[in-house]
Length: 246
Image 1 (cartoon, one colour):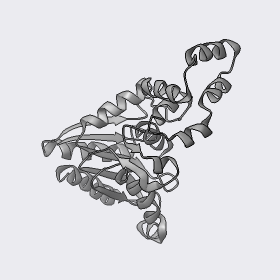
Image 2 (cartoon, rainbow, N blue to C red):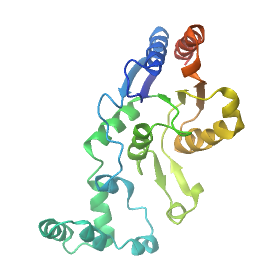
Image 3 (cartoon, helix red, strand yellow):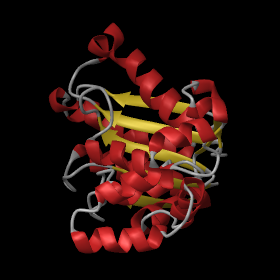
Image 4 (cartoon, helix red, strand yellow):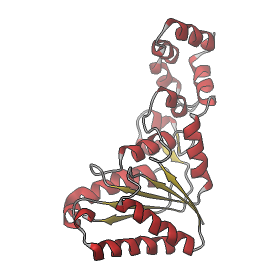
């Protein structure tokens, strides 16, 4: 199996990085092909900005929704100086809003997003290794999902979806599995008060299952800051075993 691991921790000497090394060793022992995307090491920009917008609209938007967008006027108002406005006006020409949407989407994603989408498309399965920050992923990893799992890549939109129906989103990902391994500050009892349930809904289900990943597993290595050497060793062995049994 081809496994892509997306890793998010700023410190290469962290316990989280030791988890990554143990998990990767387990994958290798099991004979999987695997690649790691270290988001901090590559300096991935997690900020969704104007350059990402063309990747989040396509020709599936219905006419009534498109009419509210005022696409050409929005593009012109976003041009921050007279020269840019002149260039945008020339690019738009006599095109209709519908044609502008088609041309925008045809521009494709930014280069860094296209590179990540190619890696995701290569993989049969995904893994995510990161600490828990504020009941979710670190900002750099959440931004990776926001920018990479775009319309036409991770999901399509029906007319009903464009009008607000969540069930109108069409999953496009075909990965057999995603495994999430996260280190935490708080202990397991704290997560059982509702934090784990919230993350299951927002991370496991909405971010991964809903776009089409067939099975999502979420492993927590609780209270690592207060763990002693034997507890940490047990966590690392568990990470290795998760790789071997992936």
